[in-house]
Length: 118
Image (cartoon, rainbow, N blue to C red; front, top):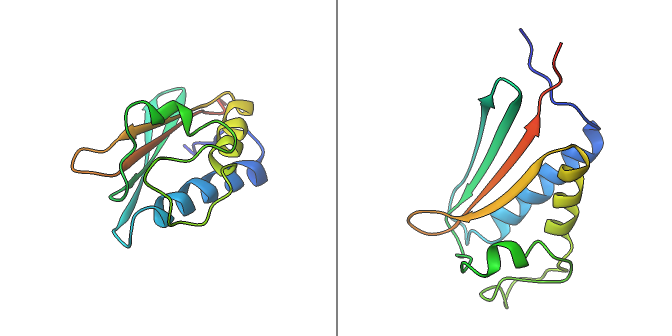
């Protein structure tokens, strides 16, 4: 049985590409891994793991605000709107976006999206 996420494909693609690009940009050439799984029967989880710059605990929510950057990214060109845009798109699709520290360094980006039930 096919599994479908409810939403606008263009907007969701924009959010996922932005989050993947961020992971690659801040990973310092280290691998980035993407996972897709059924979180429950009603929702899917997309996880992006990078092995780059760590977020401090106080930055995990703050970097989702417009024009805010992590403290360790001074040498990387950025505008500070990508995470905010991705969070807004995911929220419009009744989903959630979480940034978490990755064990061993880097960041876990968790995207939870509801499934379109048949």
